[in-house]
Image (cartoon, rainbow, N blue to C red; front, side, top):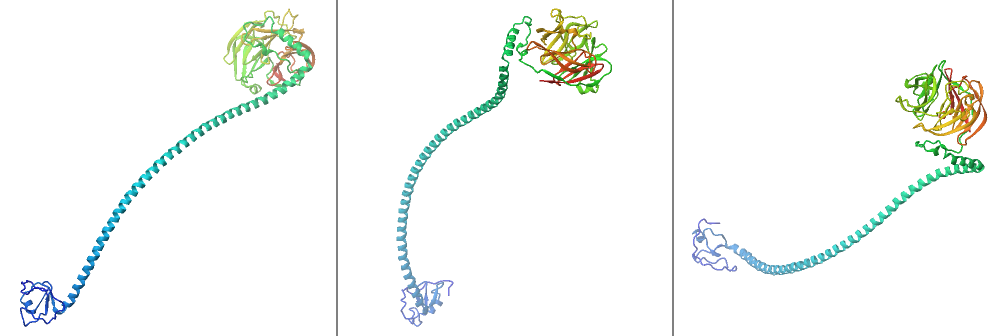
Length: 482
C-alpha cells in the first residue's frame, strides 16, 4: 500500500535483525505489536503508525514477510559480493586481456612492419628479377628477330634464286630445243660444207656491193639466210569469184585483213580501187567502198606491202618508172620516186605484150622490183627496195630467158619462179632463181592454167596459195613446199 503524503516517522531506524520475533511491541504504541515493516525506513511499525501517516508514501509490507525479504537481501548481498569479486576478476582479466591485446598489437605492428619490410625486399628483388628476366627476354627477342630477319632474307634470296632457276630451266628448255635444232642444222651443214663455204664467201662479197643506198636505214643482215623452202607442187586450182568480163588484180592486206581489187577494161591505166573489209565480202561481192587515188596507175603488178600500196604511175596508157607509195586508209600519197632508170619500157617486155614492164612483188617481208635491162641482155633482173625511201638496196641479174619470153613471174621465200607461157592451159614452171644462193635452176613443175591469160599471178604466204584474176574470175592454186 502506498500513501499519498508521507509523514516524518518518530521511530528510530534500527537495523532489523531478521531473527527478532514478530510479537515485539511498537515503541510508540506499547500495546500494539509491530505487525508491519517499512521498506523505505527499514523499520518495524504498527498499524497505528501507518494510519497516522507516519509512513505515508512508503513501501509497507507485513512483518511476517520480512524473513523472506531478509533472506533475499542476504542473497542479494551475497550475490553482490560475488559479483564484485567477479567484476574484479573481470577487470583484472580485462586488464590482462588489454595488456595481451597491447602486446598482440605491438607484436602485430612489429610483425606487420617486419612482413612489410620483408615483402618490400621481396618485391624489390622480384622487380629486379622481373627486370632481369625482361632484359634477357628482350635480348632473346631481339636476337630472335635478327635471326628471323636473316632467315627471311635467306628465304627471299632462295625464292629469287628459285625464280631465276625456274626461268633458267625454262630458258634452258627453250635453248635445249634450239640446240636440238642447231645440232640438226649442224648435221646438215656438215653434209654440205662446200656449199656453205661458197655461200659464206658470197655473203662476205655481198657486204661490199657497190649499189647499196648510203642513206638507207635497212639492216642488211636480215636479207641473208642459208636456205628457204622450195616449191614442190602446184595443186589444181578452182574459181573463187566470178566478176564478169574484165581483167584485174587482187591484193591482200594481211595487217588489216582488207582485200583490194583493181579491175576493169583499163586496169593498166586507172585510179579506181575497190575495197572489201575481208575476203568473204569479196566472194559475196559486198563492196565496202571505192577509192579514187590522185594518180593514174598501172595496176598489173602493183602490191600491198606491210599495209601500204606500192605501184607505178601510168602515163598515156604506159607504165613509167615513177614508183608511188600510198596509205590507202587515208588515201594519201606518202612518197614517190623515179627508180631503175635503165629498165626497158617498150610495153612488150612480157610474152603476151601487156603493160607490166616493172613487176612489184612482196615476199618474205621484203619489197622487190622485177624488170629487164639491156645491160643484162633483156633477161630478168631483181632489185631489192628500201620500203621507206624507195632506194635500191641490192640487184640480182639472172640468167633467165629474155623477160618478154617468160610467162607469169612470182616469188616464194626468196626464190623467183616463172612459168613457160601466159596462155597455155596445161603449162609448167620451168625456171627458178634462189636470191640467197644466187643460183638458178631449170625445173619442171606442172601448172594448170584455168583462166587463159594469167597476167597477175601472185603468191600469198598467209594462205599459201597462188592467185590470179583473168576474164573476170579469181582463181586460187594451193602450193606444196619442201
